[in-house]
Amino acid sequence: MRFRSSLFFVAVLFYSSFGHAYIPPYWMILSRTAQNHGKGAYTINEDVAFPNPAAPTGMNGMLMTHEHWVILDDLHMRLDVRGVGDLQNQIHLTYVYQNGERYYLSETGVRRASRAPATWFEPFFTFRSSRAFQSFAVARGVTPPDSARSRPQRFSIKKPAPPTAEAFLRLARVDGTVSYAIGEPSPVGSSNLLPGLWIKQDQFVVKKVRYPSGVEILAQKYRQYKSLWYPQILSVKWADGKAQITVTSVTPLANEKIAKKRVNPRELSMSRAHDNEPGSPLLLPTNSAVREFYTQMR
Image (cartoon, rainbow, N blue to C red; front, side):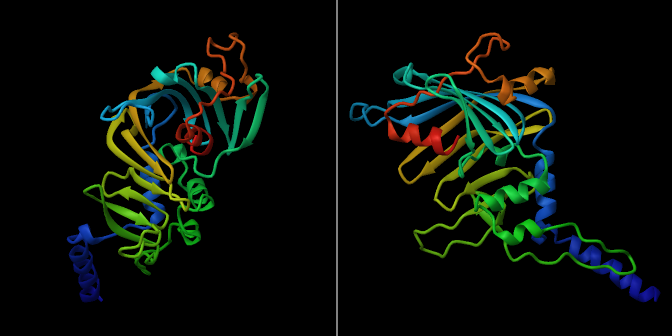
């Protein structure tokens, strides 16, 4: 009996020494990733650049917007957008997201609500409940249905059981780094890229997201803001356009009461009585890429 116990102990050490080949279960990967998404509320300022088809040949002119986010968690957030440069006075809007609904002010200032778009991707970088996120990713078609059933397994010293292999999970290289890939790999040489989620190995941050529609988001240059890890650059591409998001500041909010008020859709109004942050009525530019981005991905 002692010999068997010793043999088991040695086998565990031998296996652990090759930890670089070990792939933890999906639920554990998500749990570690959720821990990197901070606590409390944050404000995030971003500049979004779109190619400008009207720019003179040889010029690198871009269409620019500025985004101001208030994020309480992945289910409660607010986005204020205004145009910059050529888009000044061409676009402004306010979206408040709550439990999968998107609230906004119509062109006439009336509060409206609709389901958040199928390719709304901000929750991938802010989720704090791994269990709820499993369902969110499946509902968006990013991860396969089997991934929602990944759960911690109970075992004991008397009845040790290795984790059950998950067919939808593998290692893959993304942007020069190794990541955990969730989803079926795309056939080699195929132009039809399959959806999936890629989480960077060891660091446990979302590296890439691809939707069934082909919308793809690549996250780069993560920085830490207290307990929040957030990418400095997000490159977004889809069939008819692309955009690059550059983060200019991330600030934890000490006063969570104010944050809760700002992400409350009942507080959404054009009045300046709301903490000097009134909502903006929906105004979208004629540029099709910018319009699509702010109707389908925000």
